[in-house]
Length: 162
Image 1: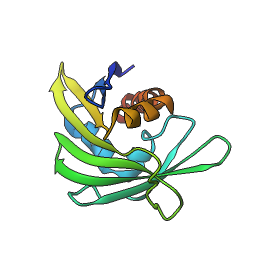
Image 2: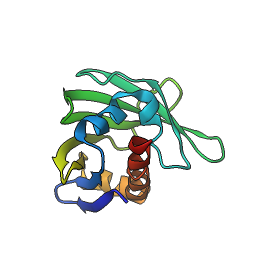
Image 3: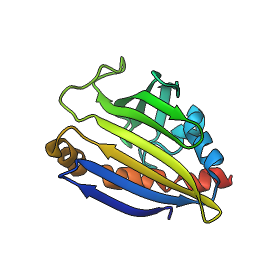
Image 4: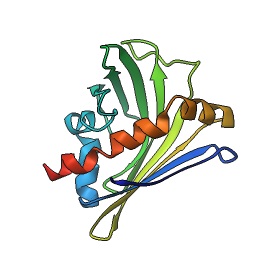
């Protein structure tokens, strides 16, 4: 499995996931730059994602939903802050209330740094999410973010090998 380490630090309000992939950074980058590829790995296998909007540029917005096994749509959004292709990008990631992607003020927003570096002939990806408060981080941990994100990230090797 690509995910090699998961840690969280309530004092620093961070969740860090490290993964090693067979593909080079440019190929891993393409997964995030292409909405159809991103849909195949953003949600856990049982919660496939659909990106309605995808604009991976500074100031860009991405709107998506994941569909539960029961058919329920769970809405989310990204607001892209920086892009340094193919090395890293930063974005805020939050939950939405509805199909209009109205921000949900009752759920946490993560400030994310996704970085990709050559490592042992492939890529080491580091995914760091920072939350405004320790309580916000704890809330997403309680919601299953570690399990969900890990199972989503673990789909990348199969996608890039295809």
